[in-house]
Length: 116
Image 1 (cartoon, rainbow, N blue to C red):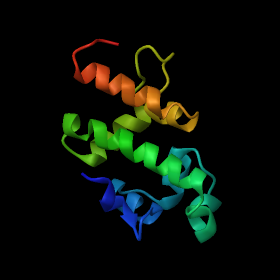
Image 2: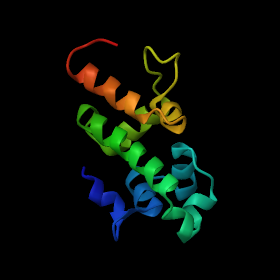
Image 3: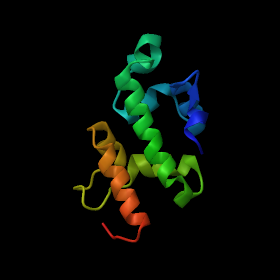
Image 4: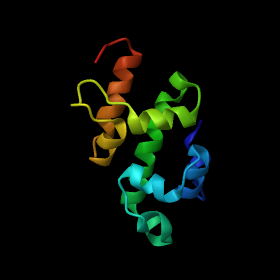
């Protein structure tokens, strides 16, 4: 699915993300490595850090969604599947540490037939 389904008025909205992944806004915050305030206070939701983390999480989930057939299963993979070559860390753990680009590169490599 496109990024726009997770946004409202040009910003990523934790509520829309939570609805798509059948979870809570607080869980979305935790999954993205953000505090509860980041998804509850309007000024924090609009902050660069919050928007960047939400965007990175959604980009990774969107990239693997075709492989799994649904955003919900892709989100479960993002949260729980250890990635080879990353010391057993999940995509979620890597994104929370600011390594989203490495996750996206990994997915691209696997999709291209390069085994990580």
